[in-house]
Length: 205
Image (cartoon, rainbow, N blue to C red; front, side, top):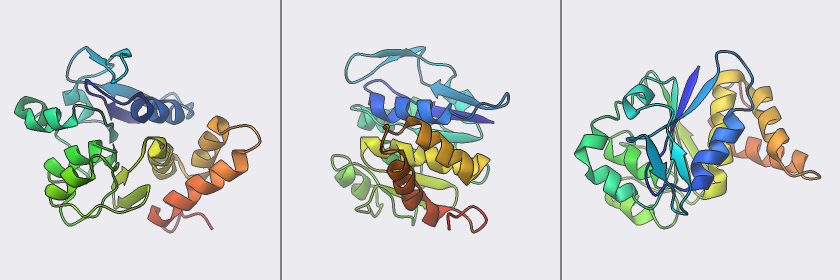
């Protein structure tokens, strides 16, 4: 199982790295989480430099993909050479987008007729792309999920784990990273956000 997190120059560390940390709570030999970038190294909005694990081309063949956000997302969607590498397909992949990553999904035509979540800064650009933006942290339709607000990256990660490994695995991952003394509350909130978008056999009762 390969999950790839698309991470571009100017990326928001909270979006890419919180998801990376939570997803890696699954400890199985075939479970792989990668950072995918158009270049060997990318620099965050705060000067943190990451080395990518895989190319965008390899990420496009992953079982699941999260598109992170950043300060330069509008530059990304304007770059035809980058966008052409993103061969994403919800019929064979789970797809998620965080904040301005939602704009990338929109520009790829993967949110046609579907509402979505994003951050307040990106909201007008996503609306200009013809997508109805919801005033909530998380929403999923089929195999495509979007989240709005940096800390909502935990919901994307939990949703992907629940879809791929089950609800108990998602609860365990959130429980591990949640603050001491608040673990049950964090797990309950995460499940409240993602449960409506899980199939009946996975939904939290």
